[in-house]
Length: 120
Image (cartoon, rainbow, N blue to C red; front, side, top):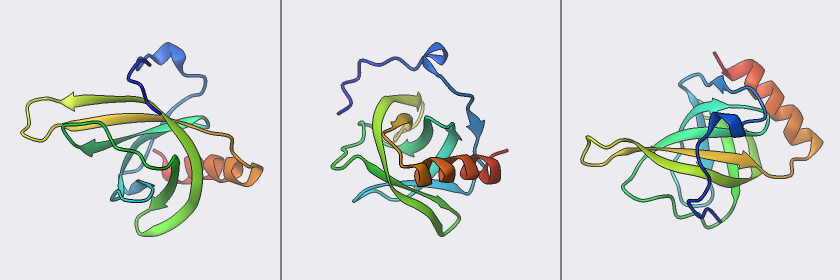
């Protein structure tokens, strides 16, 4: 569970991040709506969402989409950061960084393919 103690430091990243195409989406199970992926790497991703508070996560599984097509589901993760990026709005934008959990070889191959296909 995210404790708010991890910083959003570039030095902490082990892998290069790639900017996602604007139709790349992530869905956090079970109750969220799909939100836009900002960037992705082999070890994690970041997405933006609207909210005054951090996400209430019931499970630590996500699904990745491109447009309306499910690309992969049941990807394990943990939250690394969750910060406000636009305070000048009634409902601020937030940036949530996640680290993938233990991936199967199929999931890792999918992440690699997703990066190749759906990033700029």
